[in-house]
Image 1 (cartoon, protein in one colour):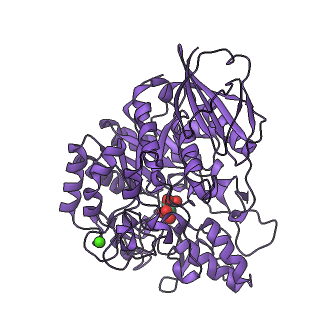
Image 2 (cartoon, rainbow, N blue to C red):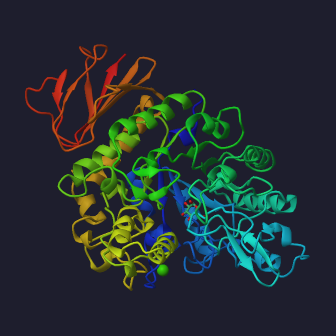
Length: 562
Ligand code: GLC
Ligand code: CA
């Protein structure tokens, strides 16, 4: 397998608005990021992924860009950016930008012009269509509720937006748009950034003709993912972007691609494809939803066998052919310790167990800010506390449809993106040391107990466990490149696997629940000499490794000779 720096790296994701505020306006900023670089370096991070920092009216916290080559004023200036980049590089780390190529803000000058008249030269930068039978051109539903089409009375046409109406989709059928975007990507590369996370990249091509999606339930709008996700032409466009721009730089790229399985992912990340280094897949993120199609809000309990199935397939299909991006958290998902672990009695144990999982799979591990101290879901009680456009639209839509508020708030509490967006908890001072002003969104009430200062002081903390995991990755190539093999496939509580690279082997044992199941090692591992690399518990005196009783959320990683 080809060795690459981005395979060996650990990525840390920053959601700037909630990371660290330095001027007391309650909003995180670039100087805040720069002030914490030593912290990230100490943790062992190689690459920092910063969510969008471009000029934006902030309807979707920066994912609505109004100028690709300027900095959001709340976050600082281009000088602050240049300094941040310099300081990142000075510490031997890299910066990955988050770039939104699927849409812009409706305040982007391109869109303002495009909306002026049907014959404006920029009209075709976006996707405008005539209505049908007094309604929108088709029945597609937006990710953020309601139709994807917004009516414009002035020109009597509709424009398409897969996300909020303030995020009109760019028209990738237009060569001039493609040129503009290529030039802009090139501009950032010349500045010295080290890579991109391409937001919503699976959606840049839509089924031409914009046919209605099938609508078995006869509802007003329907999910139509297959008509705007992962269409063949996306690949042509990405290859084109590589040939024209990316190819000339030693960078790392990751695409956000919902709605695909590993075989399909190879079209993006296959070694021979010249497209992306890795993609964020979503299959494991839908294990606790009734179905991907019904959307994330309709909860069903997840189970470990499904998680093993999904992850094992990605591990095996991509081995030697592509590369995985491994994550359990990001700014769009609930906190992993609350979702897949136990954020009460076993918060520390389960956070360490989940970290062990993500850091010992084949692929590049991603840490989302606060994950390394075991931050939990938000403790909000009223809709007033929430800020996210997706959540607020959903609330409004369902209230109008008559869903009882209590039920609605329960769904939101479980899945709202704001769970991950409460401010970073730095210490036990007011507002968790995030700001001296009033935070734009409430700090979690548990900040006195869960914060960075406390975690750094405690050698048994989740933070120090992450440091150790990251350090192990640098020491043992098998952690990066070893081949994955699932053990005990049908065990309902234990997730166990090996990784092997030439004569080096790794054995990973994870108890995903709070019971104490017995782990019986399969024959080919029994009798091997096992060296414990890391665990979230002390070994028990007199224990037998062949028949090991695992404690709640226990995780162990052993090294052995194959
Ligand atoms: C991606 C981002 C999300 C954003 C959306 C629209 O899914 O991760 O935060 O709202 O794209 O840009
Ligand atoms: Ca600020």
